[in-house]
Length: 482
Image (tube, rainbow, N blue to C red; front, side, top):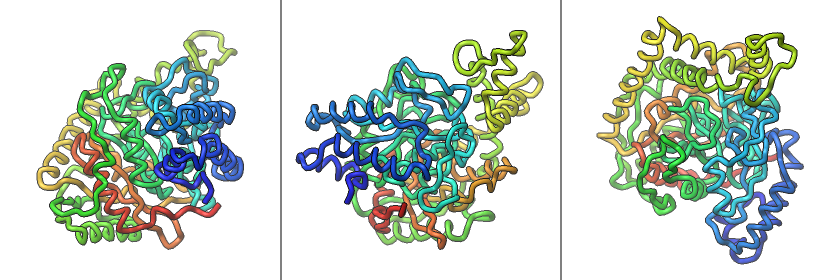
């Protein structure tokens, strides 16, 4: 086994015994990137010198730190001091942050090694990563297929064994969906569980930072590092953080697993439905009680999300005006023309579409009819989940309606792309945690994920259920052939 194929737990054991150094592990990952990333295109940039310097510091620490010596990748919307952070957009092509995001400081404090920044949908707006202005990541399992989005590069980098773990962000499924499509584990924590300080915002009431990993235990280790209160983030919640690895116990006796009937219907691929129902059967055999539940306002989730998220994006992206930082058009004759030309050239088509949608929803005479009404329905959706969790501990469902699809399949139909998020956006609207765990493969060899959602700040429950699914299926050691 090559060092780059190790899980975090396996690598920490070898690092601790002296069998492997962080420099050797990092070099192995860098060689892997050199070998396969011309096809995968997971990374916008890699900084070998910086990574090896971090690895040498990790070796000097002699295992002091929960992730000491572990090479990771970072979605390119998390600020990294002195390293360009583009958000996948030409408007920020030359932006170099003067500070780290809070989660980057946490990784560095625990000795992690940052290999580079990963490709993503521009400003996290998309479900395929095809809107990235620089590189479009490809699914490691099948050439010509999407890796998912918006954190497609992060998911692909982990699945392709270019790193041992990664950080992404999830505004409407952007961790869980690419994790599902790439056959790895990805968690969206409860809103407020992980600091958003230094995360370049898309929709501030929906965005959340979370980890990708190859198995559930590694994901729990990452969450142990990332979770916790941060005074620099006004949305961070001061609440006790458990050791998530302690919840990884076999057996489901006494647990109630809810199956939302609205998530199994028209438009769901039969192979996806089969994988999820197999997961339900495995949990029942492990001792869980399976409960039928209803989330009656599920049909409104897509409409609510695509009013709230673009409205917040319209506000957040107003700062990119060509004045303070980012791309500036130098040929304009007036200030207004400079604003217009800078933003027209700097933003891609999907970002412009969402800014226009959001600006319209917030405009005079339309605010009450659109944004306010969507916010009210959002509260109703949150109440649906509260009622469901009164009769069950966790919900099980698909992550996405289908396995990965070919590049360009949704290019001419934005609505089709939006509808692919139907099973994932509700967790962001409700602020609850969700996780995708590998559930099987399609006949074409494409991964299918199973989604688990739980009550606020109950990530440990999701880890327990995900661990039981993982252990029963025993497919988490499978790797794509590259």
